Each structure stands twice: as C-alpha cells, then as structure tokens.
Length: 304
Image (cartoon, helix red, strand yellow):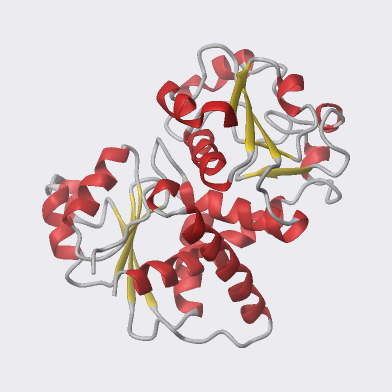
C-alpha cells in the first residue's frame, strides 16, 4: 500500500478530512472519559523542528504519549540536517527507524523532498506556505460549536500567509465561502486564489470581508522570520485589527478564531480574544492535540 503523507489539506479527500474531524471529536471524548486506547503502543514519532514551537511540540508529543507511543524531539541543532546532510539522506535513514515523522520548517520544498524519500508517513507541522494541522483543529472547533462548516462564510483578516493559504485549501475541500481581506501587497498566492474560484473573494476592506460571516479568523501581522518587518507591517495593517466593532458586521452567532500566539491589541483586541461568548481560541488550541491524534491514526492505518 502506498505511503500517505499530509503536506497540505489537498493530500486527503473531503471524505477523508471529514473522517479525521469526526475521529478527532471521538478521540477527544474518549480522552476526557479516561478510555483512550493505547493504539500506538510500540510506535515512534520523530518530530523535526527547524522553527520554534509551543502548541505544535506539546500537542504532538502529548498526543503520541496519550495513545501509548513515544516521540523523539529533533531540532536542527541536534541532527545532521543542521550540518548540511542532504534532506534525501536524512529521510531515508530516519524513516527506517520510526513509524511516522512530523516536520516544522521554513521552505515547503524541504518537506516535499523529505516525504519523497521517506518510508513512513510525513506530516507538515508548518512551513512558510501551509499549516494544515491547524486547519484540522479549526474545522473541528467549528463543527463542535456550530455543526458542519459546509455552505458557511469564513472571513480571513490580515496577511495572506501560510494560514491564509491553508484556509483557501479548506474552503475548496469543505465547501464554504472564504472572504479574504489583506492590505495591498500582502495578498495570498494568486494561483491558490484562482484555484478557489468562486469560493474565494479577495478584498482590501475588512468590513466587506466580515459582512454576515459565520467565522472570523486572523493571525499575527508578522510571522516567524519576519520580525524585522514588524513596525512596517503594523503601519500597513492599520485598520485590520479584529475587534468587537468589526465583529458587529458578522453574523449574530459568529465565532472568532486565532491560531495563536496572539499579539494582543495588534491583529486582535485583547477584549475580543478574552470574550468567550465569541472567541473559541482556547478550544481551538486544545483541538490541535485531538485533531493530530486522529490524523496520525488515519495515516498509520492508511499506510499500513
């Protein structure tokens, strides 16, 4: 059977994505009830980090342990990858010693090359182009609070970054409308926008994007690796903060999400972030744990 990887949401069919979401909800309930089966007993996850992380490392490491397996943390400082060993060679070696690999890195081409030479499933835990694991958690969170996201409207406010790209893939896969509001010059990849077709609307007006939206979401204005652009971006993104005033244009029961970490009073007001009648960011963060457990169960089952 062919090895299945998860480098973008497009690597799974809509049916498979919905299967993973439903499995995540069931795994979450089992964990809370104390009846989590150790289905990964004897399994090992290699976690390769070239970018720092809180939620990604904790959720994958804890998730593997909760399912009876083990996780190995590998930073670029700890491996030959950081000393110039070809990615292809590292992939061949590491994948002969573990059962599944997750990678958090910069260039998306790196994870594609690793997956090409890996004998086990590879998971994208974030690249500069995509963050698909976060989207699994986000969709799970919406389903738990409001039911199916199909046919709904989501507003993305801010930078056309890796999260925005994954939201475009999600709109295509799950069948919802995505309104994207970015300042000029910060739009997402035009090819991806074109792939989204009628499902994706691009504007420079946050109010227009949020109009009647069922979900409003954002991210920091300057991502990792862009710290030197912080002040310039703050000026360019003036008017793109998500706050209670902007949310008044959304549907009356609209939710707010943020992948975290958040810069309070920059891309989101502190008051909105803490308003649990609208903001579901803490459920969203927790669901990284359960969605990724479900994803690993799926990939190891599909690739066995």
